[in-house]
Length: 607
Image (cartoon, rainbow, N blue to C red; front, side):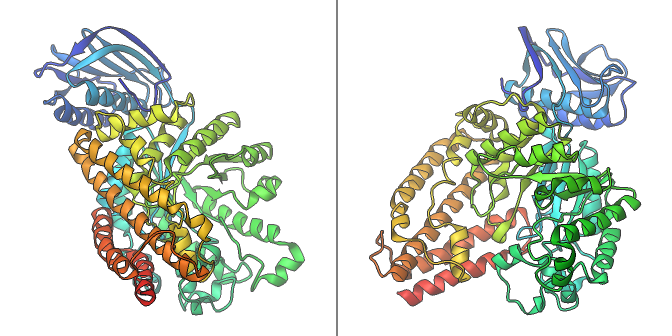
């Protein structure tokens, strides 16, 4: 029997308990009203996997199968779960602990149905805050229904904070010039998601870019004067430019006033005690309108002064500020100048990420979350092995340096081509390793996820999709850089590996066909998404083969018909759009379309 996260202490015992259809889930009188909501989760799980849902009552019953109990001696998110031949007891001192005990029992029911093995579990998290951070700005904007499913999954694996990365994709008043061509989230949707998350012991934390990464705002004619670089509104759209520019001019008094107004409108929609102001990757600071000030006091001082000002404003509003730590890592002692309530979100995404930045900020006295990543950006399918290794390391650093939390990031660089459901294993790595830092092997955790999350009786589904990401040479990143004139085609020597990559992708496709009958019916559309993603990787690599041959005046490393390939790319994109729309709005789908069709047009010219 698999449990994710692995409990802190679990003792297997002889025998089992078998549910009877006429028994009940009994809520102790001392439990709060939330216990009923949690009991409903268990009831629904039983309907799906045991064939019936037990009735729920409060107080006493002669036919008690599951008793939910208040235990004042248990603190925080700790819970105790006992399965004996006579019945099941879940004890917790808080609503959160009770929820997590029920989630563990739900995982047992999912695998064992009516007959639950006798076991004694005492469990509590290693790390207090376990966060998922999802990009809803640079490409995808999911539907509210999809975001609720995300919250359900987070709660199932015992995560307790969610952040939605936001630059412009909220329906701000007086900002129609910015969101007019988008499909932004509304205040009512945010408030509904906040309510939904709160009932699952998830804190929905507002995350709003307040310094760098303000492309759509600072490209709009009305607000371009606030941009560090002049003539921002005249710059044509560029995926690369969006990542590298669009930082506020800190010498313009209107910049801080603009941020104040946005925070005052956004903050009241959330019940969270925190507010993430962003402030990462301010690459242009001191290079344009603020150059003179930079020459006098330096960009480090400029950065710190503005971040401090925004943090103090957030504190005035009764919230604790968070900010990304990539800039301040180069002068970590400066964290002492920030308000003591401030939390530094210290990210690092390398497969072999070192502990250097976490250690430096800890030594400087920073309160920090460590932030690994699902490694899905610029991929159709997340690089799960890199995500595993990065998350494993960062969670261990969080424990070593007493971090307050682990925040697992999902980003949408260059259009958010990555299908979020193919990043679910990466999200579960973060949930599992931040709860229990006794980390299983890559193969073992993938088996558990395959069965528990995807209902895969062969326990191989995740290991199969993990084989997809490494198999492309000319990647989306390369395609974007080539289209925007920032890089040459890859060399013929590099493109030579394409032949082997395409063969392996075909092998993966065959493996997915074999595993499909073993996967839960609800998870089978994800196999379809894998097929579409694989074909996208194949088509882009073939386009790379042809542009390489043209630019280097060599023979293509593969025989590719340019005219036929153009049509295949356009037909493929119809299926890609269908999958996109299953989970989200149109958002910036058109920007991905522009890249795909640019290559289709180029291929026809080449033909």
